[in-house]
Length: 142
Image (cartoon, rainbow, N blue to C red):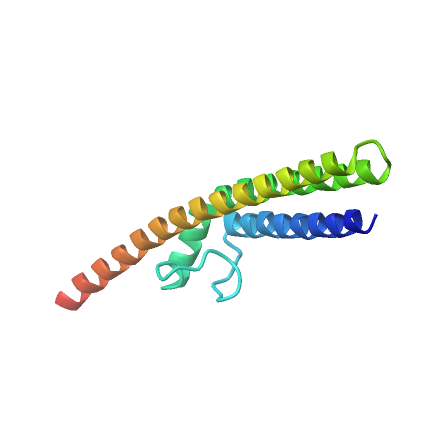
């Protein structure tokens, strides 16, 4: 029974992390996630300016939300399998295998989608930074 409690706690932590990613994605989508060094898609390009940060995060927002939602689904599945084991409807081996599968797949899903979001954000921020450099170059020549 102790293993089941540990697994449920782990799945709850995964759920909290997944929901945090969804929330950050929503803030990014609205452009309300301020540039910072703690949370968000932090690359050299996105951190270069507030404009680059906002453009990058808007570009990566949907992918962050997809990643977090997939993680939440896996976490909920892990919790359900843990509860089913505690109720005695599935064996311990089956529950452990189902939970491990749900957690590993959902973590992989989140990692892939956050990497996709980061690539999109970096590309969009780079475009903003290049336009700003180009405009500064034109202004300095005038």
